[in-house]
Every structure is written in C-alpha cells, then in structure tokens.
Image 1 (tube, rainbow, N blue to C red):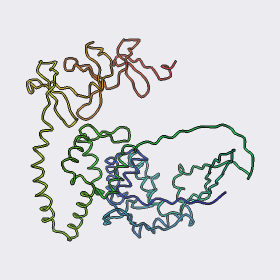
Image 2 (cartoon, rainbow, N blue to C red):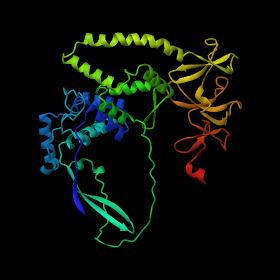
Image 3 (cartoon, rainbow, N blue to C red):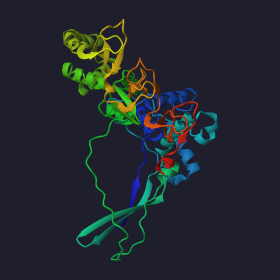
Image 4 (tube, rainbow, N blue to C red):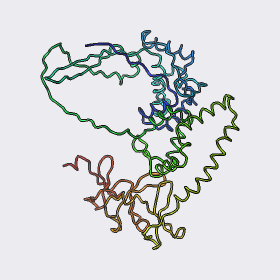
Length: 437
C-alpha cells in the first residue's frame, strides 16, 4: 500500500529552542551558544537572542518570500505565522532570525569564527525553512505472512523536498525493494532483537532547558545562569553530554526537600514568575508581594538553620592522621564529605572519602607503599595520585594501568588513541590493534 505523507518544518528559534538545538546538533553548551549568539547579534547578523516569541516581522516575511521564490521556485514558498505556546511568553522581541536573508552563511564563512558560522547557519536555515512548504514522502507499507506470523515493513521515498532542500543530510530515504502482491520471498536471515525497559536517561543541557520551559520555570535570560550555577556549586558534573548529580547535589536537594518543600516545589517557582509578570504590568504591588513572602520565609530559615547546622557538624572517626597522628574527622565541603585532621589549622591533611571506592588497586610506582586513586581538583577535573599524599607526590592526568613500559619501566597510561608511557622523556606508544595481537 502506498500513500503520501508530509513532514512540516519547525518554527523559528526562541532562546530555549536555539540552546536545545545547538546542544543536540553542535554539542554546544547553553553558555557557549549564548556567547556566540551575542557575537552574531553585536555584528548585526541576527536579531536579539533572548526571546520566547515565535513572531516574525512583516518585513522579514516579505524578504523570505522573495528569497525562497528566487532561489528555489514559487512552489517552495508557504507563508506561515506561528503562535507562541510558551507559558507566560513575553513577545517584545521577534523570534531569532537573520537580519537579512541575503546574508547567506556560505558567503560569510571566511569572515567569522567556526563556532559563529555553525550557529548562524543553524539560525538561517531554521528561519528560512519555517516559511517553506512541507516535504512530501511516498510511504510504502508491506505485510509479509510467514506461517502463523505477520511481519510489517515500510519504506519512504522523497517526492518533493520542500523545506528539506535546506538540509541535504536529512533527505535520507528508506526504500523497500520492488514487491508484487502474493509474491513468494526467500528468507535471507533471521535476527532476534531484545529490548529492555530502561529508566529515563539523565538530563542533558538541552532536555533540562526544555523541561524548565514546560514547567514555566525561568526566562530566556536565566536558563544559562541556572545551569552554570549548578556546575559552579558542584551540584552536577558533566559526563559526556549529560549532567550527573554529585554527592553534594543530592545532599542539598534532600535538605531543601525536607525542610523547605513549598519553596522547591515547581509550582512555587512558576507562580512567583507569574507574580513578577503582574508587577511588571502594574497588576500587583511589589512591596506587599515581597513582604508576604519574606517575613514567614525568614522566620522559617532562622528556625531551620539551627536544625540543619547539627547535620553538618564534624563527625568523629577511628582513623588517625598519617601526618601528625591526631584523630581524623569527617567534614563537608562543596565537593561532598571528606576526611580532615582534627589538628587543623596546624595540620592541613585531608583525604577524600571517595578514595576507597576510587582506588585502582595499583601500587604507587614511586613510594611502593600507597595505592593509586582517582581524585578531583578544585575545578572538578579528575586526576590520579597516590593515596598517601602529601607524603608521596605521585600524580598523573591520564588513567594508569597495571602494566609497565618495556623501554623505561615507567607505568603505562590509557589515552583515547591507545596506551602510552607516563614518562615525558619516553615516547613509547601502543595502539589498540597492537594490544590485541
């Protein structure tokens, strides 16, 4: 069975959708995206980049119409006006678009930085594509009977590119071979695929921004500060494209949820945003709003502060400081719990509680007494060091393995390209292929 199916273009960018698309397609962080967008705005290439509006000016719509019809033909143009669906959207600005449709990305490629070019091309294509006709595919559905079983397959072939003409990489077809009704087919191979139900994946910056927007939390100007604050306070770390909560992040979340549930409730933040909007348009008096919130909130903070302080009091342990012999205690920092000498500030010995779990079970090649453990700098970067520090100062950025260099006997470390010697003077390297032999 064959039928035509259409694929519509996406609306022009708002701040949040630009950040999401740049993260998904270009692997840009929200902060990097806004930095590059600011540069494009300052050079007059795009409109204001902090907006939640989907509106496009009549001038741009006319320019886009002329551009599309001239470049691709009249059958590629379809004027579309989008309605903003974001909760409490402020439409003082247009959607993000190029200031002129005649400033083509490829013509400006050599005049701007690589990151700016990629982002400008993304904005240009989305704005122009939003005013183009649908792409038309011919869909072929096929049912194959095999005994008691019925197998289904479908194929897509492009009939009319429409807005997809701007995205050659998206014009992939999934065609079926030519088949006749009641034709007998020969089995080529069988393949069993098992799918297991998995929990939701961690947030990426893109999916977090999308969720914040759907809950009515934040503004175009606050998505970046929200995410950067989480990183700077070490509530989350970034692993690949995803945001992973840290021990201190879990602790803060649990503490606030138990002691201030009404403050961290999604509806509270959304309601506060709405009240601030009412102040902006003169429907609510800001003094009374702040007073009604602040006085009971301060009273609760003062009361809860004493309770919370007890939870963060240093905890005694049975361990002793390897440096001065005094008892070690468990303290809290922005990176989580750690061991510290009770003789501070005379003795400044500290040790991460994660080190026992992060031990590589490899004896330190320098002192031959301690073990190599995975540690983290104050800026959150991981490195590998001896757990007897500061008695032993052995440290590496790359992860060591329990093998030694055949040339100089230094410990070997893993890299993205293979295994190499940890000694700067030795250039021994082993590729993954060589290791398999």
